[in-house]
Length: 237
Picture (spheres, rainbow, N blue to C red):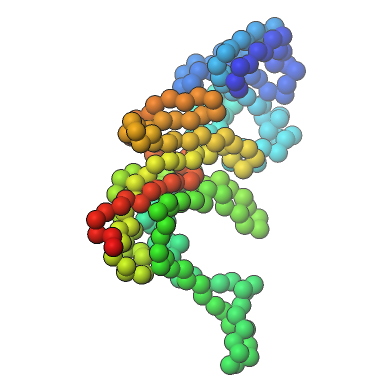
């Protein structure tokens, strides 16, 4: 919550107990009737559900939160999927895959529907390259937010071996911006990292807040869209 004033709040008005906590969740102070909370910055509140409310309400949406908090007040992180590299994501994107029964191909020779395969290739790449990581998984019965950490190069992303057309151009890229997504399917928050070329320094953009950030801190599991610029070299032409 931001720029919040919470006055005259009675925790008994809610089917759960409210606790005020700090950024590291090291302290939890219960919020009682007539509690007054004034803050020009963000505040963090923990909701403690009872067993009765767990049975009455559908809490399935909580599985999409990056972190959940049990009724004991201790923080429990969701199990994070195994980390993958950006190269493995690209190779999976380019791998030949069979299509399902709903995408059968009609063969004009045998006049029957046959199972088809799909294969994508890269023949040329632009100066500005955008990677949109698949963070939201949908199926007929399940929707899920993927929090897998994708390890991506910041410098010298070389994609030459993936390009089919050998035209003598360099396909080496430098990262200059990242769009991040926090939260689950029901709602979330976007932030960004961008590099100011003139200063050769990264900055964090979070709503109206802009602050410098270390290069080592721009790689997170919240990375959603990656922006690269091709490095011009003398071998072109």
